[in-house]
Length: 251
Image (cartoon, rainbow, N blue to C red; front, side, top):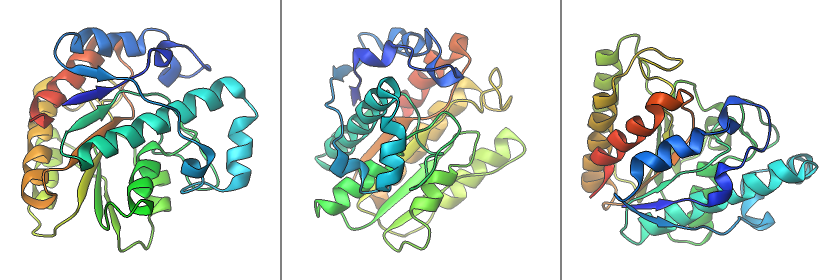
């Protein structure tokens, strides 16, 4: 398992909970000494335009601080996907998040759709033909769903459930499919935790989810899997929740 991270992600780039001071530190401290960290390069315009329109790219680029952080996040997602394709599970520890970014619009602290860009990059490079994206963030990733609406190559799944047991069972039920994919991408949001906005999952549940996804990638995705950070806003528990997920998700 490799962690794709750049020290610039510690910087505050705007005024929202995803950009809050100390958010990245809460995670890096929890993972320190456990995994190898790899520094990514920014995505280029060609990468961004695999998903987003030129007007949307221009819109984000008007704020240089946000744009520089957003292309670095997309670049980290691409690097994670490439590592996964080559057989090394990876986690893109990034911000801003991306799953609310559609081809021509964005909201919810997102600017470019990191996971969609990473998957599209692999497809454009003819490395994969079919991908499965699981998004366990509290919020539905409308941007990812919009990007791949009607696609036969990429399936997006956002589990539901009013109770933690229902939520986990719904993930397991979906993962029982015999369908095969070339890679598994995970939008990993931690705001469904019992001490975060969602008030539902325990820290141990994230390890359970991570292991289910690992097992699915072993049986259905040629053991190729990567995840990118989406939500998670309580700094007191965010780090241990990410660590718990990676314990289940790693080799």
